[in-house]
Image 1 (spheres, rainbow, N blue to C red):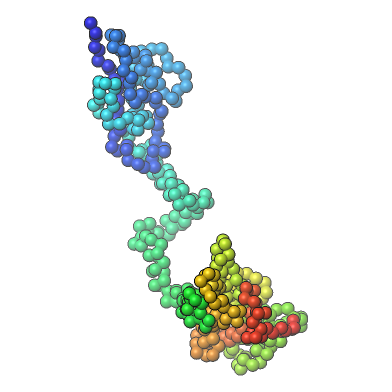
Image 2 (cartoon, rainbow, N blue to C red; image 1 turned 45 degrees about the horizontal axis):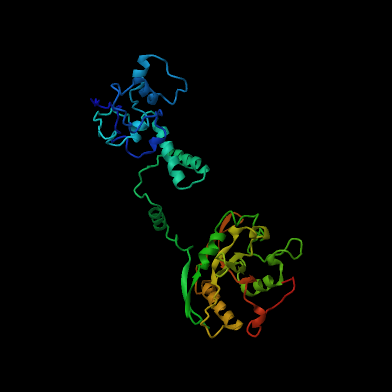
Length: 412
């Protein structure tokens, strides 16, 4: 007669809802690895004893202990219990486990599981959360120390870490609103009509900067306008520059500057002649060199050559876009002179703010406060263009009929 014996299933514990929450605490929670079967194979039914406690203990040994378990019944019975901190107790079992064809499921309630991070201090929890945030933002390693130093300094001065505005754009907006001239250093667009339009381009926007704020950002910089950066006479900075050794060297030591001073300066005790050195050079903005742009920069010539070699001594007037017509359907190609006229149209839009200052239409540089050798003085700034250094793709040799290239000696 066939003897049917019930299969004794090992005790199965179900994960609690609290432990299933996805938090960063899963990484640091105290856990002991245990090898627990997710199902029990169907055993032969011709044996009356279908469950051996010693076989069960093979699955309940701790991975932490590499030694063999002691041969006593107390140890075996204790190790057969499920550890509430094991990974298997939280992740290895589903809500229902079937065994063979019997479909036996254990409905025993799992013991309470300790909350995540309960064994770590609040400081350790916050540090771990910050490290996770920095990793997600791909922040460099030194960013952790920088942020911790910033947070400590802000805490010491009483900063509220729950501010009203919590976004970068929102904080930038109130900064702009707090300064009446905050947007004067930003670029703007000037729409121009091309003298020689392309088949697909009739007009275009030119990126321009207001000249006056750009120049004052240098002249009102006390560090930049200190004695180590100026070539003027510290005893009389408004007087004509004369090299102390009588030799050519600085840009103001040439004859062009002396002619400008005699022609433009009518009140030497009030007017400061500040000639401009301009520079433009085309550069590519894509990896295939299909699109280019030319920044048009300037710097005051009252700064020494060593000071002008620094990037902070230069300011932009705008950007010239290099126009190209590469469409195969174009039947007409622009000549060199037509390209030069379109190029000059963009320059005229960028230099409009400078032209208004030179003609007197813009009086913002009259009776203005600037720094000279560490002292704040009120002067009228005169700013003619001394020279323009050009390294551009525009071939002047092909348009000599409209552009006269002038060459001077070194004494200019």
